[in-house]
Image (cartoon, rainbow, N blue to C red; front, side, top):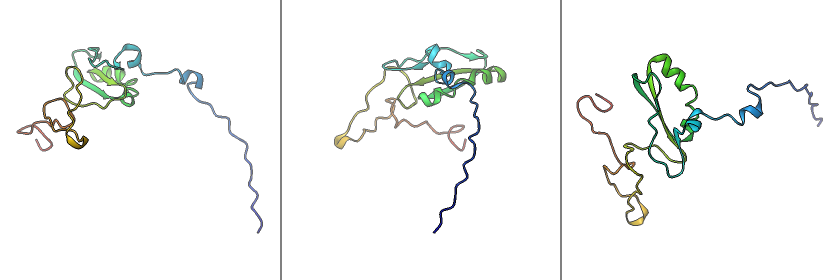
Length: 135
């Protein structure tokens, strides 16, 4: 059996914008402004970008969401929105987010106890007229 000869093509010259040394130092503005919380910080900033009197636009989540913040001020300004970035490293965003963080109660067997209203993942929005998925 004869092996087919592979044709070696010249490698195209690639250009990357921005340059790699610049891109490696690039971070979303929320890191510079302190809007992205780290460590034991839990109180979000009150910074607003875009139209401060506009309808609020919240960008919430962890560092993955923070990466989306860079173009958001320009979008908020163009559309008359008040951008309020609220992100924190290494944690999931859970509503309601108020007060200092609390440890979830642990039931026997290591399962989390269902403690509604304690700021945990078990909180559910109230449904009624004008609320919920079907209005």
